[in-house]
Length: 66
Image 1 (cartoon, rainbow, N blue to C red):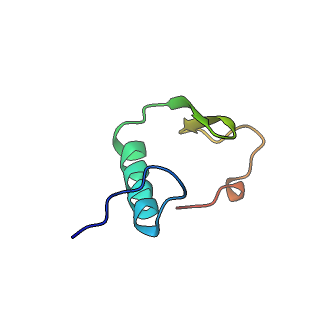
Image 2 (cartoon, helix red, strand yellow):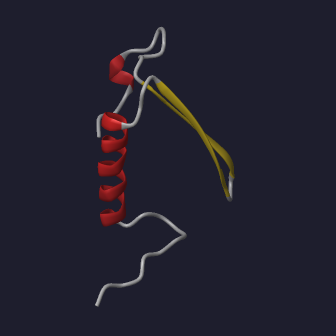
């Protein structure tokens, strides 16, 4: 029997793998030019920016592939 999914706390390794796979799929099939998202956390808001363009004056090496 499967253990129920946790809805708080850190992601399990399996959850992180699923998140990464879904994010790749989102970027490949849903993301047009950019997307700005915001979510609340116990530590305050988090702002997420997805873009197909490298920000000006930023090296591609500044990003970690996943």
